[in-house]
Image (cartoon, rainbow, N blue to C red; front, side):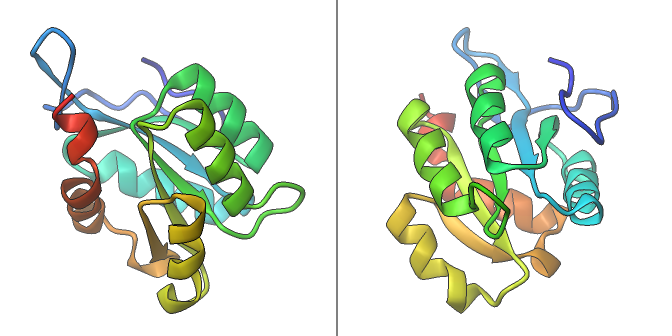
Length: 152
């Protein structure tokens, strides 16, 4: 599946972490959502460098995130908490109402202690400070929270 939205490229496929319906393996599809262009590009670059993950799309708003989640069916959504119009909390609730199997991780410039309670209340799997998002951390998050999808 090609990446949709801004900041996408066609990087080569690598072995994936998710078992598909035919019993094969595929990469974890990730949607990156942030209204800040440098932050969105940085998160997309992390996804591109992470083994077993592919960037399926990027979005610059909560509304766009909901639309792309329905169309692209990402396994994982990295979603900024603070955005204009529809924030990450509301976008998480809408994404999970449409696709409850999606793993949503809220990312924020705020400390994790500030956002982890909000993450739990809206159904997000985790909250993560933006500066902590690295390929290794992405893999650890998926290992911890992506188990339901990986076994389905």
